[in-house]
Amino acid sequence: MIDEKVAVAGVLARARQFKFIREVKRNGNGNYGRWVEALQRIGGTVPGQPWCACFVVAILGIWFDGESPVKYTASCDMILEEARAKGWLKKEPAPGALFLVMASENDATHVGFVTEAITSNAFGTIEGNASDPEAKPTREGWGVFERTMRSKQVRKRSGSYLYVHWWL
Image 1 (spheres, one colour):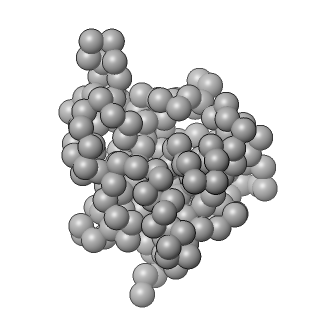
Image 2 (cartoon, one colour; image 1 turned 120 degrees about the vertical axis):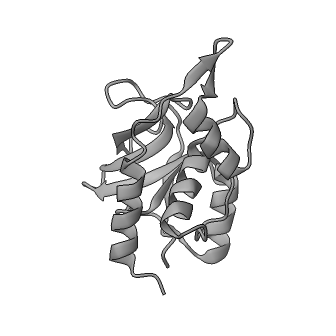
Image 3 (cartoon, helix red, strand yellow; image 1 turned 90 degrees about the vertical axis):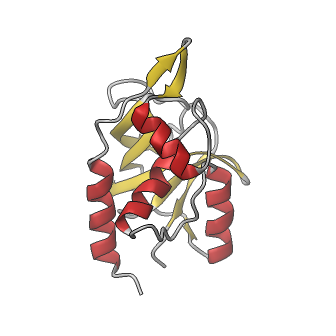
């Protein structure tokens, strides 16, 4: 049984330790760099590919000594499928939960950690492959950043959010 409060605090503390990560461009393309590529290997993908899911599973894996409650993957859709199968999906954010940006019912396009439930319209996050908080949100970011997400602004998409309570 997971002690939810301890696990959530630990996971978020670990995630914040990675806020120094920034991408390096190669031939004008993003999703490269020593730390980014290490996260991509953990998630099971290759340099040049999106890495938001890799960040999430790496942080969970670090906190849980290699035994992440979420399977190691580079796919937001695979995290969505696993969460559905395990009954972890919720409609409200909670600190420590994963947020999924949904383009459609079965298409998750981005994932990160909820850091705080602020209001019903906004919540704090820490996410990999994100844009910095002073810039407009983009699907392809360039580092690990803490942001505030607003439910009416879903990364320029008309979808919604789902939340993965991985400790259930």
